[in-house]
Image (cartoon, rainbow, N blue to C red):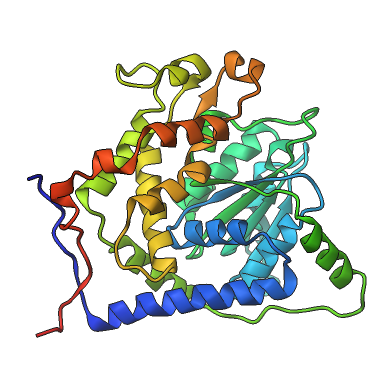
Length: 359
């Protein structure tokens, strides 16, 4: 019998926080629904990333309310929000801030003062991130990783919580600067924003062509989100579920001996270890948002798309056969059934939260 991760003991008040997060998730969806029609899966993936302390890249054509969705989410979470429209002439200092010389009128003394840029907010919307040169992209992505900026040799911490939600238009490619794979890897999720169905589009037209305007109520504050992020980190993951996530990531690497033939045929580069980490963290957040106290393999499978679609690089064979990364990931999940990583002797050893205050 294989070893399992021991149960994590939580206090009763921490278990109550998990229940509160589940209720908050339901309320957030309801409040967002007052402003945004449909896109429930996009909203869920955004919240999973936020509570897992990750950043998101949203891919979608213009007019799908990506900016409105992010701003409404910031309002519902009672977080400071800034939007930066990325353009070819945008400089790093336009995002991070710069030092200026100021003179005190009373003494005549001149000194440098740091003026903060728009990145000093809880949620930063980087609109059309691929329209700005690599130097400016790198400045933003450094802040995402380090959660600080350095100007004039002095470090300035970014506010907590801090999230970058970037958008990208998949249609226009002229005059753009595609993000390198190493920088794409900094984003926890790559979220696809698709067209609404007919009934949703009808409701959008009905709402937006009238004088009525809905406003989302504030559900959670920044300090509460920080506490909930810590609770997500404590969610237990059994060994077979963690190994399932690792196996999915490793099976995208064409150089390995046991990968399927279609991976060798259609994939140039597979996902790195950060993908395994993000699969587990995202699955933890998803489990808690749905009111469960432990992660299942189904939680892992549910986040494979947003975690891996920007980490698996396809080749010309895939393009020639009309296959996208999502098609390859779906085939990969079909050949990695859950039961293979969860032998019968382990299925009764699934760890659960246990109250430390219980007798």
